[in-house]
Length: 250
Image 1 (tube, one colour):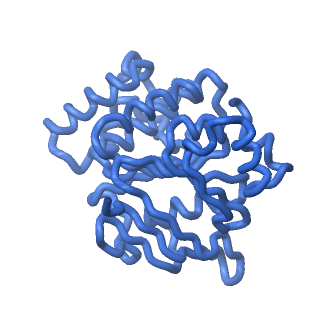
Image 2 (cartoon, helix red, strand yellow):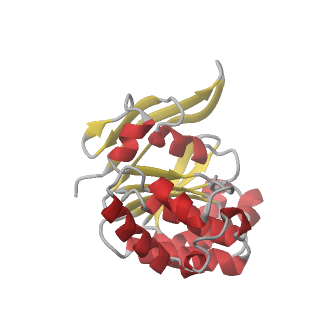
Image 3 (cartoon, rainbow, N blue to C red):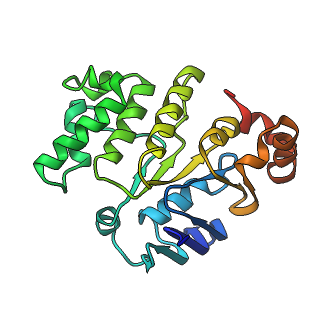
């Protein structure tokens, strides 16, 4: 199968000498979920931002057969690349509905309404508050809104940065259940940045383990179904000191 996204020898620098990512390479197939797993500071978010066009990077990013390293953010979104940041960044002063409209600003009115209906059906928690202020939503509801806003543009590649961040275990499970429902429809590909190994395994196909800006290992989710295999991967790729980080809220 032809890859939807191929990242080759990606390096990201902040300033003249601070390197956040070093020669990272991975592929994402259509309809698959690829996870980037690692502790804080491993370079996960920098990779996502480079693919989205939010920061400059060295190396090659090929999307749908086209090298997109020089494409502006707007053009990447138009081609179907959507980034949902780790802090959600919803517009609290606007209503839930207005936030969703922002996500689908580039499509026709009729298509925007259809997509909004789909998003609200997927996330009934925010459907009941669609005309209320976004600032009133709980953390989990804000995360649902952020994902829904991303879906409004009709992405082919959804970049999800730490969707479980700051959420209680019950809400984490609820968000991941909805993500599973999303991936079950069509050929949407997802790149997922996470620290939560067990929840990630329930959703993804491939896991890439990062440490200090490098990919240090790769596993298929099916290879990590039992506890011993998971612990072996953590010890080998992340270090025993990070066990608690990547399994929290499991």
